[in-house]
Structures are given as structure tokens and as C-alpha cells.
Image 1: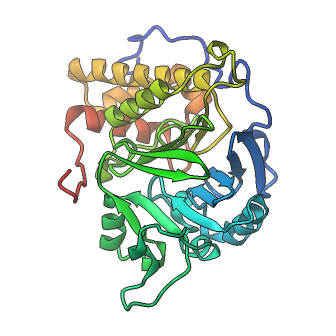
Image 2 (image 1 turned 45 degrees about the vertical axis):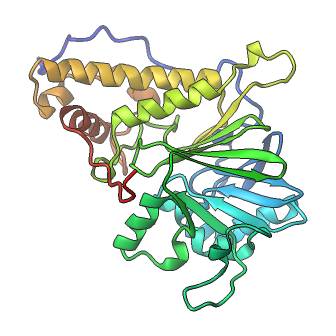
Length: 333
């Protein structure tokens, strides 16, 4: 018998689909072409550009959450161009993975900064005036790109170091929250009037959370982020004045509801608690893996091959429960 076998009374196999899913779920569009799906309010979802891209469009112009992979940049610009008479003004990066920032350098050139915004972002070091969209990200993302010798063309030019950054754009409050989670510099965004959250990889219903321990990621941070998002959301059945309730755009996968987030949060909490229990029993990492704490959720979230396997997830959780994560914080906050 494998070490740890029989320790858990596993739940029935899990189904990650919502009971009442929103129309046009992104997960069904696997044809490889760019699609723009209306969400609600000013918000649309652009799919098949790498990670999901959230699009806010209106009279002031266009704001994107993440820019997709570099190879899809031309198609992204082509897809968003008809959405507003004004150009792209902002790109907000939720983290620094290639499927979220790969298009930064090219996509930003399809826009220009809004009038009276942060003037420093309108000039290069030599004083040359530029007409490019602002890229917003947490300060630690900029520090990390700089240290890794990433091209300056991909850097955020409007980095923030506080716990929150706020914009008013297209007559809507856009709240950008710093949430150390999959990495230290993760952010998620709440579009208040539209009642939509853009979650980045903090919430990815296609797999277990990708926790980059070396860059300050932790299971504790992921849970904090999911709980923060849940507190901002209102389920549809409690909203008589509007249809749909709060909707959430994950880093990958389908447009989701409060119920989807709650289900994912429950799963991540159970994973944390099971692995913590095994650690308290004195088990090594290999013994924890042999105990198969994820077994009843693997059909929905697990992978045995690829860039993020179930074993890698278990190892990341084990590491962050047995020692504090490195913050990677360069800002002093």
C-alpha cells in the first residue's frame, strides 16, 4: 500500500462547470481564432490570444487586462480596433508570464496615452515623446523584468507599489488590487460599474493554481486572493435589479460566476488543509505525493504532463506550508 493511502474519504468526482453558466463560455471556442465575447457593461472577453484578455471599451478609449502572447499581437489589435473611436490607452498586467505580457511591446504601440495622464510615461529616457498605451503593473514586475534583462519595450511604464491603484476610465471606476498569490506581484482588477472582476491566474478553473514559489507565490496568497474576490462578488440570485450578478474572467478558461469561484475556492482550501494535515503527521514531500491528496479533484484540475503538473502543484503547496515564501518585494511596502 502506498504511503498515506486510505487517509482521506474522497469526495465524488468534481464537475467544474457552473450550474447556470454564462452564455458563450470561452472554453468552447477552440478554433484558434481571436473571438470577442460581450460580458456585461463596458466589458468584453477576448479569447485565444494566450491567456484571456479582458477588454473595457467606451468613449475614452480601450483598456486591456493583459496582452496575450507576442505571436497574436496583430490579431489582438485588429480585434479591439472597432470597439471604440478612441485608441487603446491602458494595458494592465496581472503577472509576468509570457501568455499575459508577451504582447506588451507590440500591442502598446497600437495606442496612445490619455490626455492629462501621468506625463512621465509619455517620454523615453532621451526625452523623445512617444504615443503608446500605458502599461500598468505592480512595481515588483518591473523590478523582475529589469533584473532578467527583458527588453524595455515590454516593461510597465506605470508601476504601482501600494496595495491598490485606481483609475476612472470610460466613466467607470477601475480598481487594481495587488495580491501576492501565484507570484508576489500578482494583481486582479475590479470594474465596479460593469460588476466584472478580471482575475488573472489567481483564478484559473482549468487547472490547479500555478504557484511560483521562487517568485513569492504561495498557497496562502492564492487563498487570500480568492477570498478577496469572493467578498467583492454578488451572486445572481441575490440581485433582482440586474441580471447575471458579478461575473469573473479567469486567467484561462470560461467566463465564470460567483458559484464557480466558490467551488474553486473550496477545492483550493481542501488541498491546503489535506497537505497541511500530512505535514503535521511528519510526512516527507514524496510521502505526501504518494498519499494522493488531490485524487478526487484530478479529473477536473490535474495534469500529468505539460508545464504545470499535479505533482508540481503538490510540491509548491508543501514548500509554502513548510517555510515562508520569498516576497520578492523591492518597494519596501
